[in-house]
Length: 66
Image 1 (cartoon, rainbow, N blue to C red):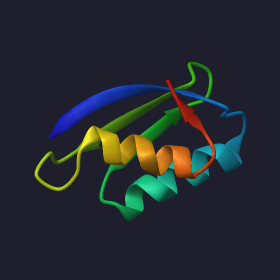
Image 2: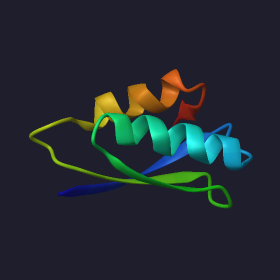
Image 3: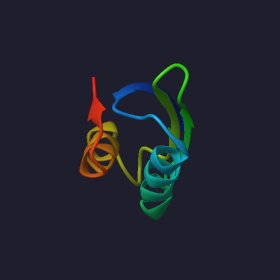
């Protein structure tokens, strides 16, 4: 399993957490949002997805990955 921490802008509430974590779960990625640090910790299998796909899923939810 690959583990990466992404900086994400635009998150401010529990809805943001649910939106991002739910979207990541749909593509088989474990995600944990930290609102205080504006980060998302992701764990994923590199044989199933890649970091660019993960960033795209987060951005599709309306957030900016920096």
